[in-house]
Amino acid sequence: MASFKELVFSGVQPTGNLHLGNYLGAITKFVALQESHDCIYCVVDLHAITVPQDPKALTANIREVTAAFIACGIDPKKHIIFNQSQVPQHAELAWIFNCTARLGWLNRMTQFKEKAGKDRENASVGLYAYPALMAADILVYRATHVPVGEDQKQHLELSRDIAQKFNNDFVDSIAYHGFGDAFFPLPEPLIQGPATRVMSLRDGTKKMSKSDPSDNSRINLTDDADTVAQKIRRAKTDPEPLPSEEAGLEDRPEADNLVGIFAALSDIDKESVLRDFGGGQFSTFKAALVDLSVSKLGPIGSEMKRLQSDPASIDAILADGSARAEKLARRTMDSVKDILGFIRS
Ligand code: AQP
Image (cartoon, rainbow, N blue to C red; front, side, top):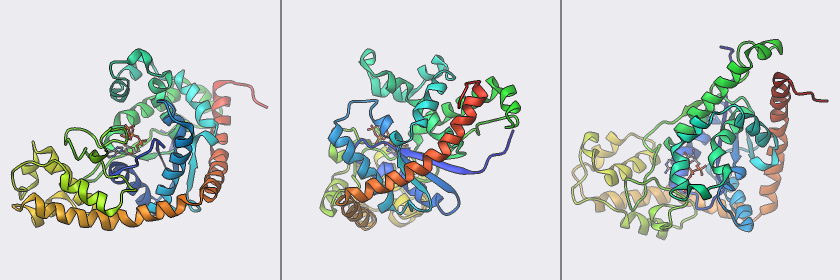
């Protein structure tokens, strides 16, 4: 298979209530990868409209995610931060991938089943086709590595299937146009660490999620210290003390979740957390988790608020990132059109 320059791409939906799961599962990874890779981070506003959005709230949420990226430490000058709808090639390649992906593949997507629920007939076509757009987001930059939370693993596998099928379907044309035996890389998911799936604080079997109607189920990046403390103190636990070894967390989803959050926030593994807190009561552990969470998230929340008070500066960062992203995306689309046999001037 042809070799590709390593490039990182990932996105976050501007759907409000950015939370600890988004931070630990995705954004902290984005920050770390800047040291070793060229990175493109996208506010995926086209994905957001697969479910209804209020236009004013959407604008504010696009700025909020951008502010979160920057407040967490992503450098928009060295890397690229932009919003998806400013680079039309995402939607253009998504159409081509709609014609590459098979219905059977999309029918297997569990996120669509969960989000559409019982009212499937009323779900938007966009919600169903979401994974083809996600494949286009990544592959329009021919990106090789994608840091995501565990919940996106299946969509990433579909992106690889789409890339592989495109490479197979057009193998001769790809070679004819000088791209060897493959035009698209098979993007690799980067899903690592103790918090790839942060669970709800109210129910350790449910993912922490922006759309959970209970605000107490999640820690928002913009929560103040008192709110964080209250949510952690009220977080569901069980009556047993914490175990001293990781195996003891099995069948204790709430305990496992809180230990995972502690480990990820302090950049250690769960075993090390249990070495310090094993055998102790939840109240002691929760007090330490409150201090840790507030010390990590407090400065991020304040910086997000500061950045959001100047929307023009955020919009300028998005405009600059979008122009740089579009240059790269246009180059890929030109080649895709040549490979498909389209005429272009
Ligand atoms: N609970 C989570 N634990 C770890 N990672 C998570 N991510 C989301 N929730 C968790 C990761 O965050 C990145 C951005 O997610 P997104 O906003 O694009 O989409 P999402 O997965 O739909 O987010 P939510 O918060 O769960 O929203 P709703 O409520 O709409 O479903 C992704 O890398 C995701 O894996």
